[in-house]
Image 1 (cartoon, rainbow, N blue to C red):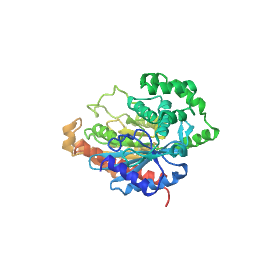
Image 2 (image 1 turned 90 degrees about the vertical axis):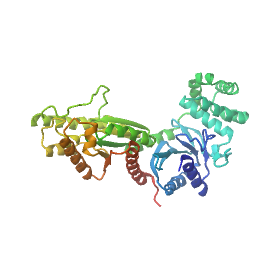
Image 3 (image 1 turned 45 degrees about the horizontal axis):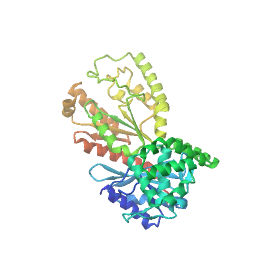
Image 4 (image 1 turned 180 degrees about the vertical axis):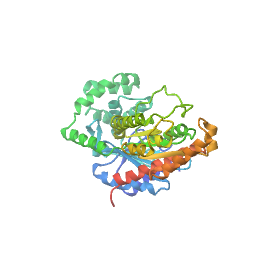
Amino acid sequence: MDKASLFYQLIDIFERHNLPYALVGRTETYPDAIGSDIDIVIPKNKIDLFHHIVWEIEKVPETKVIQCFQHETVAFYYIVVHFSGNGPLFIQPDVCTDYYRRGRKLLTAEDLLEERRKSKQGTFYVLSSHKEFIYYLLKKIDKRNLSVEQFEHIRNSFLENPEKALLEAGNFFTKEALQVIERCLRDNDLDSMLKNLAFLQQSIHQSHRKAVIDVIKDGFLKLRRIMHPTGYVVAFLGPDGSGKTTVINAFKSNIAPSFRKMAQYHLFPVPQKDSDTPNTDPHQQKPRSPWLSFLKLCYFIVLYNTGWLRLVVPKKIRSTLVIFDRYYHDLLIDPLRYRNGCSAGLTRFVGKLLPQPQLWFVLDAPTDVIQARKSEVTPEETERQRNAYRAFAESRKNAFIIDTNRPVNVIAEEVCRHMSDALTERAHKRYQPKQ
């Protein structure tokens, strides 16, 4: 199944449930070229219906709903993933009712949908030309970001019905701003439009100020994000030579559409240093004394907990995937690398005082394969570490052993499937309405 087929599965769900919708934005290339989001407008009284029916997409084999991000009080988008054997495929239905920007209500859903029509493709609904014009114009001006293709889309919508388009724009822009917009569109002058974006944005903000009720709703939305962060934390463990760097990079490429941002840390939740160099002899130094090792463990307690509060938790709230390349628990498996002279029991106890990743991936390969990649320790030590890492993974329900003696794309897809399963489980608990 390709992205176009998955898109039409979604449209079919809308049609079967008589959902009055319209796609907005640059849909002229659909379904051959679909952007990162599928922007959809629905009536306010149909939000509950949408939240119920979107889950029917999971009836398509190998397809799951994995995330739901709410970015305005009446705007949210779901992330759907499909595994076809060629890596994960994503679509993101981004739904709004009344159109808000930065907490300001600019357009109502009822007004936008009033004259909806079938697309030129004849397979889905879109807004009328003048409604599409004002929606997209406001969106791009308030973002102060306008490409050649986006300007052309606004201009084409304008030229289809200039009189109605200007009438719509008159609700948001001063007379002077309206003249600038009309001149730029009639003269096909993108450069002039770009130079005036700040001026035009100011006109929008002056004509539509935040209502008190919208400020309150926005505050509750921020509180929900804090209480139920949509980010996630994963950690990759494994002996040197198991392929952590290669697998992490491939995984990040695969899973990227599932999150707004990504952040990666090595061992500790501290900013990565560009100057870090590989340790070619991790066992060259003797362990610290038990007393110094104990102080080091105390330092780790402070380092991990403050690092999470300062860096990891805010990123989770902002829908970021946080990836750790190694984690504290490496101390238990390879104490010589970290010069840890404390007992395994004490080291394990300290580990329980630290915040934990939500998912663990333990990378493994045959000893001779790992040794061929990196031979900084003896084959016997590599074998010992492999067994210790596997035992660690087998002792946790949220840990997976990943065989890295395979093509990278196959490995990355397996990791992505495990990640998607975890996200789907969370999404069902948080967002799926009870039947």
